[in-house]
Amino acid sequence: MRGEKGITLVALVVTIVVLLILAGITITYVLSDGGIFGRASQAAQEQKMAALRDYMSNAISDAKIDDIYAKYVKGTTDSTTTAAAIIERNFPATNGLEADGTHVKYTGTVNVTDGKLTGTITIKSTDKVAHTFQVDFTNSKVTDITV
Image (cartoon, rainbow, N blue to C red; front, side, top):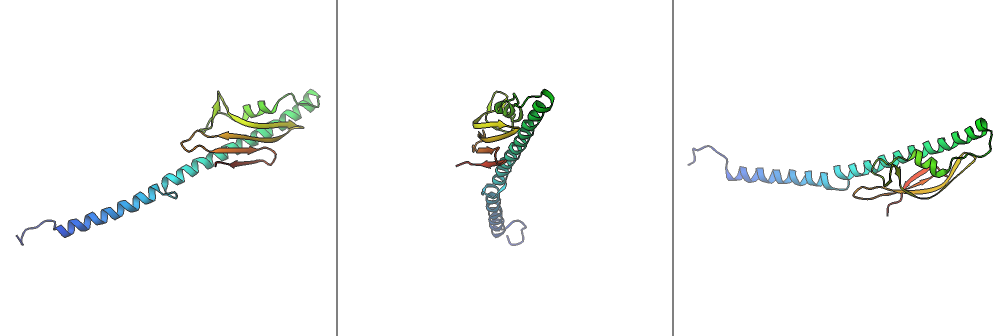
């Protein structure tokens, strides 16, 4: 039997041990908080926050434009556009955010005075791990307030 060629039991055991070590490292890398899935989830939340910042910026600009239009084109001192209408125009129901028809569903109060939006609204995501975002028009900030 010594002259036959083939895989020895020791070589087979060493191969299996190496494969188990590689599998353990791969599973740890993929499933840990800093792993691929954890980073992908974090990137999705950061993308939502960036989209909300863009929506907020658009809403702030929209309020200013409405105020300028009311003052210089219509010749009135008050814009007839409400804060709710500005939010509905600028916060579309996309990116996994809770929606009410074609607009983002939100809670909170926002006011428009002299072309400035003030106040805070709260918007929730519809992901597996639901996040709650706070959009602060007064300080132009978007915060993830998930508890």
